[in-house]
Length: 450
Image (tube, rainbow, N blue to C red; front, side):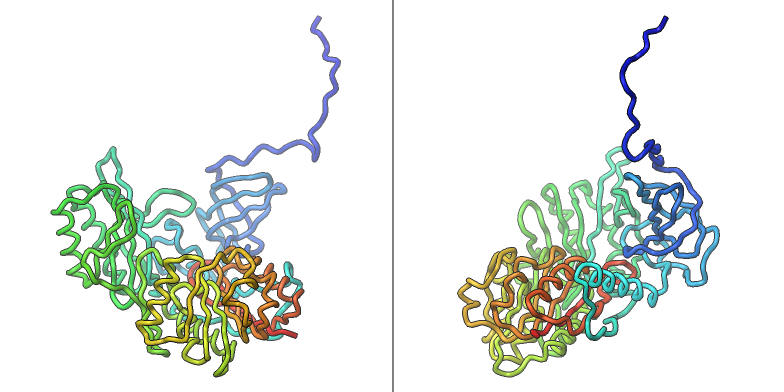
């Protein structure tokens, strides 16, 4: 007779665990609404499905990409019942390339999605809405990107160089012939680039490539092994043909192939030219960047004689236009190399009343020597992590007006809650459409001391 177990059997808390949905499985779904990242949301067997390329009201066949607990990530394989608002993506690589995820959604609906995302974050996290919503700040829907990173990988087995953009939800490389979101000079460069790179004697030495366009076009070639003279000459001839600078990067920092080459961009309303180097942070959308600076200055309404603080100043994108209006701008950046370039930009443009400092912007600033006199107004443009440590003590700097430029509604909402607790009121807010065809949301907010 078999021995009977005397142990007790327990059912896991929460009931019987469901089997995971296997990657690759196809599932028909009715899509109910959009997530803030632009994916459609549907529900099957108690699980929430987030489906790239799907719109509310549609029935789709989706393929599973990943699962975790009760959440399934998937992409649209077929649209079985489309809604009227769906449009044919202008780019033939949409759905394969990971760069633009909303091309199937009309631009007006993209803006509405971004507006909802900002509104929900401010309400849910900070419990506030602005006194006034500004109209979305928009530029061209396509041909706007003045910077792009091109993925390159040597296929050892097939002895072939893959050139293109990373695929959606994958490390695969999608060969791209045309990219309609690039500015026109970079589209021309991109079309000719794959054949040029494959024609090198040692294409396997290429790590990745970056394209830039400002006052001139530029091509940065990151190489993992020294390039031979013949390959250098080929790259030089290619750049000459396309009126582009050649920059090279081995184990160190990017360097111009020809001594004295400068790369920059202009802010026309202020007759400014800002120099930068590949690797520096530069807004990819030149048209919206200029409109953003104009709007920031309009909202701040700086007066002659005022002292203004610009935090996370970068190359001086806001500081140099500001300093043409006020008595003094103190501009602060965490990266010393950027501080030096911003100072050089001020000097090159003949602006002597902008003063640049390096500081750890993850810490409070009230004790800094340059902050002792206080400020009339503050502008800050932090990275995605926001500026919580700075914001916690910002009332000590005495500013009555504060313009916050954000690339992450979640951290903007968090920092808004702290500013409101310090006595600031959210007077105005609006989205900046810096990245059309994507769900990425940038925003601007104006705060005034109560």
